[in-house]
Amino acid sequence: MGTDVWEFYEQYAEEDRSSLNERDRQVLAICDFRQEVNSGGFDSYFRYWGGDTALTAAAGLSRLLGVAWADLLGEAVGLFGVPYSLDADERAEKIDSQSLNATLGELDLRFRKLEASTGADARLAEAIGANRA
Image (cartoon, rainbow, N blue to C red; front, side):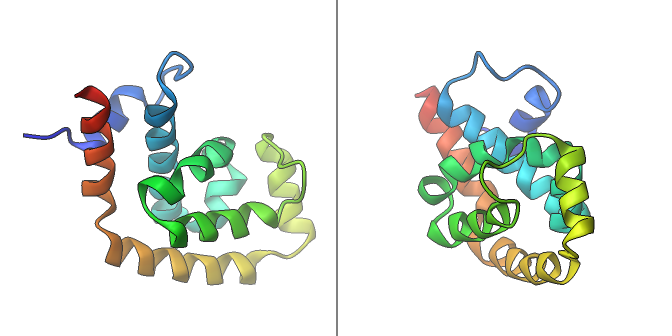
């Protein structure tokens, strides 16, 4: 039986991930992304800690879940300018000052369609298993 992606995530959700290999860090960051957007949308993801790992998630999305996922997160991250802030308070300020709610809401709809059609759990579990082999 393969690795359950959410059990793997639970192991490292609040741990220092710096000692993990790049693919595992990317899988965990993608789980941060999916967990937070599913819970409160892109607004919540970027407003709080979840968005801290957005660049790590973005680096692995194309390979692990597909170009549509990478494009979606890339577009969302792009709303925050360059360089992307790793500070949640700065991101929240930008959301509020630029009235990004409607744009983030549209991204939420695209995210839900991807979640419903991708089989993301199985694909991420496969990536974890490949790392263990």
